[in-house]
Length: 490
Image (cartoon, rainbow, N blue to C red; front, side, top):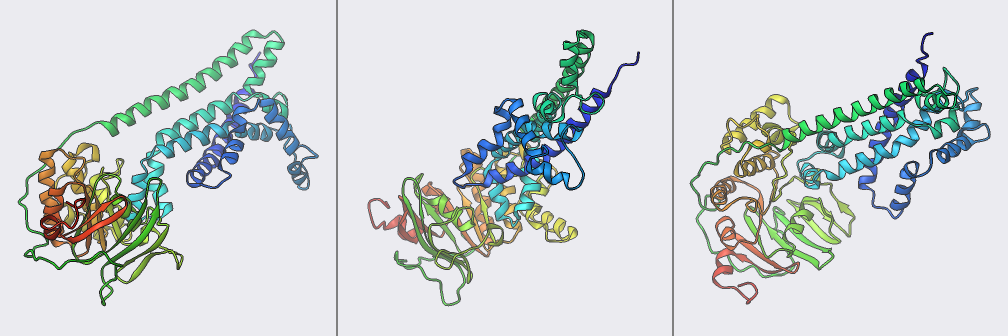
């Protein structure tokens, strides 16, 4: 007698369709919940994961109320002379509902594991939300998403209670392998029950083992290191100009020059421990933000870049308003022409050096894009590293790639958030010289955050000393170091 393999095909068909449905709906829902901060978040989260907690028969009963002949969706489909209950479509819907929470929670966890600084730096490089999702967030979440897809398939393949309630047990139509096992045991056909049990276990475990092996290979590829070398460079002075002793700049309400060129910042942001009050102007110069940890230096940069929103105030760059609380203007980060270099450089680990540098140049034709990347590689002494990945570079090389990527978009403001903090003493000295050389030819405003006095003196032309979220001094580096106004500044 030929074995009836219909439970296998029905199970694969319903589980496959359910996996496809949960993949797209789970990803979309996880991405939406990642950015959702509304008051109903906990309630929505509870509803989304409910099928994972409720007994399958309860889920099946609720689906029966929804799709039954007296249910709202049942009455809707009846108008088209179509019935879902007790068909294989019902089995697919039941499998989709019970598998959805696994896909959703795993995808959400994968999204949350991606370093938020990578998403923020992508914004400052001019990338839209859609491009950030497809080029940064999704590729870096692939291991978790693949695991969620596998778990969702395994859960859909083994679904029993909800399927029995909504689709019934009709041999050749809705009878899946779990139901074939149950009714085989009831009929005393233990060999048939063992057969379907072995098929389900083999299918599910094979998928899970394959994903685990792939994940280990992926992690080794990302985490393995092959450090390069950092070359020494001769330092140059300031921006190629002789040092002058500028006049004292009092701490008053900032205003731009008559030309309107330069950066004006006059913002306030309420934080957990203090209130940030930053007010200053900067033209074509390197301004250092000096202060201890938690003084508000990095938050000031993040507000200028657009990855944080001030509570009130305004930010104006070369006559264009980037933020104005009163006028309800808040230009998105990707439209501000501001580049931000994070402490850890935030290089995209899945992209090569050339791809990292070219990330913000997608609006250019490919020949021009390649030409500009080549020029930056030469200018920052990175020839021969274009095809390497961040984990194959030393700290100094990573820092130069981050600078090249930030400069590639020709920003009007370059924000440097403690760019040497991740380097040891030797590398710090080498890379600092290279940075001074780069800033000597940069035509925009550069803000350099540090808590190191010596770094601030060597790199910057002017300094703003911050403490407790407020600027307590703003002057040339010579005046601040030689004639501090207060004991705290000294």
